[in-house]
Length: 83
Image (cartoon, rainbow, N blue to C red; front, side):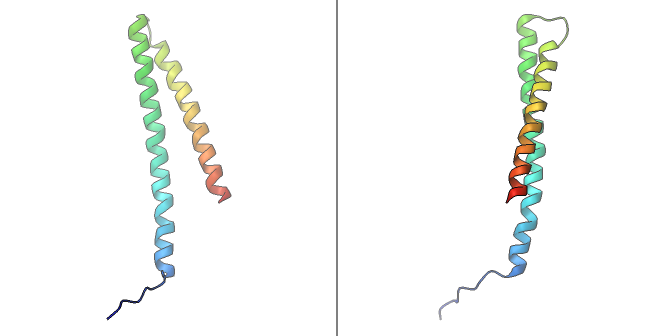
């Protein structure tokens, strides 16, 4: 007996479409957190290397990382809205 290849039902397509936004937005949160962490770590390493009295490099790198992360998120959201 041969199995018939069935078409995907609307329910299957709908579940797949509902899952993707959740994964996308979870990924954005992880991306922002990861960029911020790495930039803070790099800034802390530079502060230790140059023996600064306050964490100037860490602050500067975190701000740069957040600006970069926000830019990246806005570009990805524009791409999704265009699809």
